[in-house]
Image (cartoon, rainbow, N blue to C red):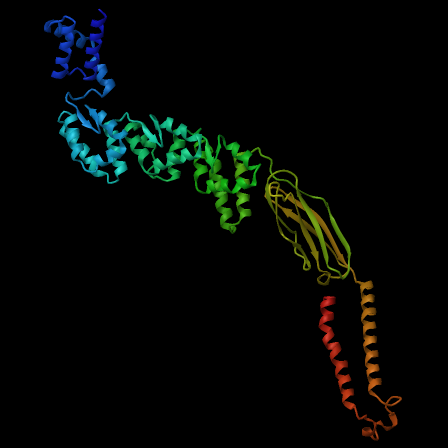
Amino acid sequence: MEELSAFKKTIRNLLVEKIGILTDSDQSHLKKQAQTLGLDNRQFGALLQEIHLSINWDALRDERQGKDRVVRPIHIFGIEVRSLEKLGEVLYKNRVKALKYLEDAVFLKENVTYLSHQNVDLAMEMMELHGSERNSEKRFLKICYQLNANLPFQVGEESFSTVKELLDRGWVGQDFFSEIYNTFAAGHLQIWIHRCFIDLINILPAGESFRDFLYFVYTIDPDYPFYVENELFLQPGDLVTRARRDANFWLPLLATFDHGLLSIWLERRGMGEIISKFKNYATELRAAEKKSEELSRNLVQKLLEALAPDMEIPDLSVAAEELSFLNIQNKALFHPIVVRLNNKGFVRATVGFDRDVPGVWISPKNLTLSDLGGKESVTFHLNVDPSKLIKDHLYTISLQIQTDYQSIHIPLAIKTVFPMRAFMLCLLRYGGLGTIFLCIIRLLISWAYNGNGWLKPQLVWNNISAQVPSNHLVYILIFIIAILVPLLAWPRIKKIEQI
């Protein structure tokens, strides 16, 4: 009894393997086994028919190779093929050989015609598809998916049965996400979608750029995260948190916005109006200013404020509530003023006066403060040149520190007075120098004169030649020195005294 059960199982397995079509050799071999069990040809035939009827052939065909399988198979790459679906599967799984197979349409035409039960229209359709694509990789995928729409999509070593499953896998790492994009840029992903996911065709963009890819991804699911370089962010607020911790993150973040990548993600999340306003602001600011790192960081600060409206804005303070300088004499004033950033953020400030006063100015006029850049406080200087101000006149002006968020006004009083003390010291200094110079000239004359006194006045006009010494050239030299020394010293005096 056990031997008969084993024989029935053998017949069933062989029928399943051959899809119900046994060769003469198969039947001859089974008859010999039946004879050893005491079954004649009639009993063997009845048993074979009974087992054949017990098998659900429709379900088996659907499971194995499709409904339209042929009785006599063809062999491709050592594999038995009985349907168009199986042909597509064999080609897909043997890419290198399939590319060779598809170099011309000879094999494909014959195989499709045979496996489609001589459906010439279908064969012509496949030939048209083959001839319309010159790129071998795209042609390979188009034909495979045309033959079998249930084939998966492969990225690297992994296969995916749905677009959602594929994109979900992309958030495991930037490298794999880039591989998915590469298939999109090559047009391979679109081929799979066009054949297997007709409902997604309408949201496929026309282009193949990275922006087009992100548009497609976030149209599929706006709640997908976002990559900035190799870092993944689940929510827009995570960008703000990250930026407020690291100044090095600011410029890469702005680059994703400038390339139109970040705006796609944010717009798909319902922040289109906010992003539109920021784009207009950035365009106007860039048109008015030259490109610089400070400008870029200022734009990031505004972007963070747009993403997080409740974020604390930068706040500045100055220690001095008012400034008064009422006794400026001859020395120029160079007074430092410290501005501090009281919280987090990046801010640019412009320093100036409510009205211009010649001889009073600020250096520098433009300030930049940032808690992340190590510039939580900066110093600028109030400069006063008393030579350009009216003496004993009181100047009252307002020192203004202006930012995009606040305006600080500091009252400033300036008065210059006549520098009496400096004048007296200068008079004594140069009077002493003049006296020393005249004494030196007198000593030189005494040295040059051989007599015991001055020139005799009573003889000067009667006989001038008798009064001129023989070394009169020395007198001429001393006279030249007396003239040149003051002339040469004057530029030096002007520089020292800032005349």
